[in-house]
Image (tube, rainbow, N blue to C red; front, side):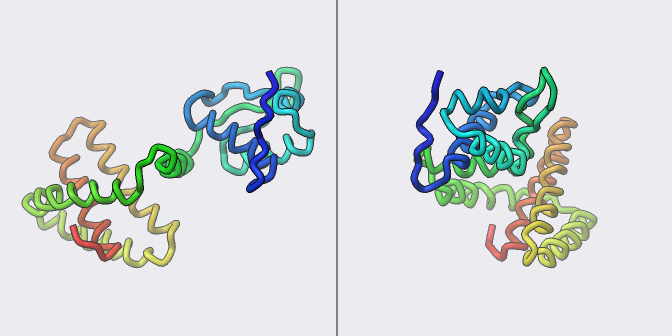
Length: 190
């Protein structure tokens, strides 16, 4: 089946093809390890030149979404998207669903005070010392987006580990630390 609606004048045909395949991978239409096709199959399916397919594959490889296997059973295969790639796709998808990021932040801002009160109520001296140390790290990293994201992801991993372990108290405390630290580092109020 020929899929030729890649004519978005705002982007190159290679970018349009990459976006089409990216959406299929990120939306779960293709699972990690699933064969996307050979370069020739993609060229025929989308009615584009070899150079366009090659460039689209390079773009997808750079995004960590595909890998190429040579040989008779080779081709282009979907990769497991990194968490940041999935998150970025979900944030961008908000535009298409009529949900504004500001609306999401408004909900978060409404919930955070409740969580922060509980976190403050149960904050031990050792929790406070750890919070100060992490806040210092996050504030030091505020000018470096990569370091800041790493520091916040450390907090998220802690929350997830507590949830997976089934430890409600630890999960509540970790979520509370996350709220307090994120708001403190960003200079916002809870």
